Amino acid sequence: MRPYGESKLVRIADTVADFVAAAEQAMQEDTATSGWLSRVDAFLEQISWDRTWAAMMKLLDSAIATRDLEDKANLNGAIAGKQAPNVITREFVFDYLIVGAGFSGSVIAERLARESGKKVLVVDKRNHIGGNAYDHYDENGVLVHKYGPHIFHTNSREVFEYLSRFTKWRAYEHRVLASVDGQLVPIPINLDTINKLYGMNLNSFEAEEFFKSLAEPKEYIQTSEDVVISKVGRVLYEKFFKNYTRKQWGLDPSELDKSVIARIPTRTNRDDRYFTDTYQAMPLHGFTKMFENMLNHPNIKVMLNTDYREIEKAIPCREMVYSGPVDEFFEYRYGKLPYRSLDFKHETHNTEVFQSAPVINYPNEHLYTRVTEFKYLTGQEHSKTSIVYEFPKAEGDPYYPVPRPENQEVYKKYKALADATPGIHFVGRLATYKYYNMDQCVAQALATYKQIAVTA
Ligand SMILES: Cc1cc2nc3c(=O)[nH]c(=O)nc-3n(C[C@H](O)[C@H](O)[C@H](O)COP(=O)(O)OP(=O)(O)OC[C@H]3O[C@@H](n4cnc5c(N)ncnc54)[C@H](O)[C@@H]3O)c2cc1C
Image (cartoon, rainbow, N blue to C red):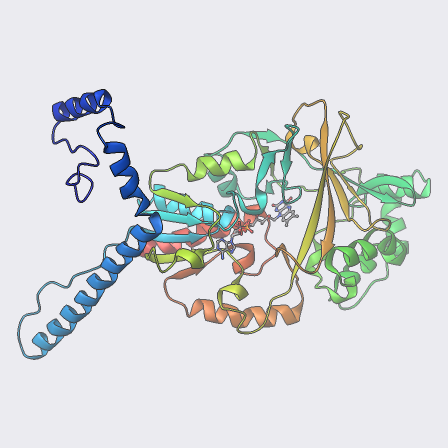
């Protein structure tokens, strides 16, 4: 009403009939000659969202100040033996502020909104949802993963069934070739890998003997180098792992925790799947579509291009779920946690197929580690094809927590701080400094939601 209605900048209608009449009158009015248009323009010139916002904040602050005074008075009254009147509580627009619209943030937002009826504000500093799993159609209309290939695989039925509420799936088993000694051979190393590489025709039993003859057993397996050399020996280690790992992590495998390479099996059969999980599939219409379905709820508002620090004071929420880097949250109090980053070079080629496998690893030649051709992953049919090269680097967006014992020690200190920070839940790859896959992020987010829901 004030000042728009009073100053006759708009018409105010009390009933439906009044509304129709006012609308008809407005449509007949010659707004230029009546002077209405110039009055509205003059008024709007005086205001902006920033000013409105500043005025709202002033009102909020003065309400808080009044409440504080009243609280004090109540306290004094209570001390003097008087009955304290009702305490004024501040209404929150949102129950939860969720920082990050990747898997970790989106799953918790969805659960809190849909299952617990909470009002949730999701903010992300990027201009899109989905976090690192974001995919989109490039300028040629090919579906690509902006932050490198993301292949979904899990052994968790709970995770798979949960995500199945938001997407249909396309069955997909991932396969990778490695460019070694001028040939393309399967990785993880299997029977075909060694037969092709050495021009042999071994069967599974003979392959087992072959690996044994190369292996250098170690009493204590501590590093990634120990893992590989104790299984397949130094020659295969150097052909497939040493330089790839150096490029990927900027560290020699002898400096990296054994967990990094322990993930990669060696096989004596012809199984050339990269993963052997029970559930292996890609979202039928892509990851971003799945995230859109997840976040499509009246209780969820999404704010992009926004660092949470820009709005956390202006839009107070009861609690926060944080999926950004934990060291950044605590302003690097114990120093920076090392992350490995990547440069992605995306290209589109005017041919239907570019390479003979979804991913080709380059352990030894080139500065990039691997090349991915997206149409294998997405099943899209298109006359052109898009690929991405990955160039590892030390600085840039934080992608991979570097798994070394000394980094874990620093993380432990941040974790202690996080545990001692009430009302904030730390989740995901960056906030818990863990080399998690997508399914692990979903599992962790579901578990965190269950904890929150107890008190929510
Ligand atoms: C190159 C690459 C390939 C991968 N391939 C696979 C794969 O094949 N299979 C698999 O299972 N997993 C894969 N992963 C791992 C997968 O990306 C992660 O497990 C998952 O996406 C992590 O989800 P998250 O929500 O924890 O973090 P993220 O996806 O990183 O989301 C965190 C979000 O928080 C936002 N944010 C951070 N700070 C702020 C702030 N101050 N204010 C507002 N927003 C903020 C970020 O912008 C980001 O969008 C891969 C990862 C990479 C880097």
